[in-house]
Image (cartoon, rainbow, N blue to C red; front, side):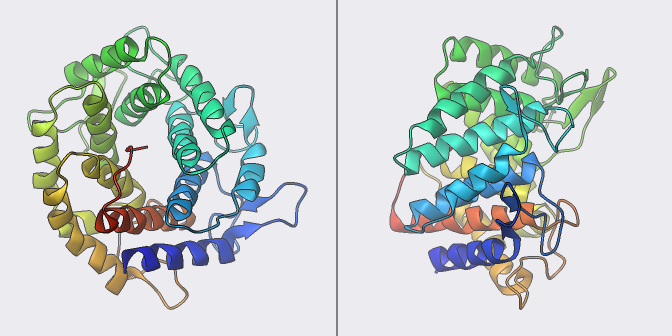
Length: 312
């Protein structure tokens, strides 16, 4: 069932958003929308990799062409003529790694390693990885995702650099409930918690062979199926990927299955988009979350089939 749901959600995404009528291909932000930015494109590439892992044939060359309009030096801007965000490039790097793992094209791995080197330039002298070039804001999403990418890409000195970043994360953004706050900006810690920050930190900590039981338990305790329903699927998919990377993910499966079933029964609209039932959304442009739903179903399908995988 889960594989079929993933492929159905993917088919809708491609049908309504992938366009090749320009000089460069485009992935739209939704039906009739504007071209998608780097953050949703990272999730689309990640979804495409999971579709390929299920035996599908996603248009990877077209997606790569769409990314080309955002290339800027050794990384990607959020949108043309904008800045380069370190978290965007970390998510893209992780998606490239996954694509490389399920395809025979080694260029994906090479490009992921290039982005791993880029995100190291975002390290702030006061610790952590900045959110965007030219900003002093340091976020959990940029620091933890960069550490995860660096470790998965096996860059030189990855362990020592990632350890330094996670030490800062623990010292600065770790809350008493063992979850991570969102960011520090101007010396003020913003205490909001989001699933994707926890998932990225969980995977990076696991790759460093650090204890993860407290964080894992905090994630499962904090987010019930009802709580997940209010979370953007784009955030939830990253946390779910991390939870399933554990040696025994049965507790996460039991906790998250009601959420996944509700996505299927309540969020899917007649046109195949997962925007109904009051499900959480990142914004009003649904491509990002649709790509995340593809991943959620595909990851669950892999568990059912007994396939084990790297978190990326």
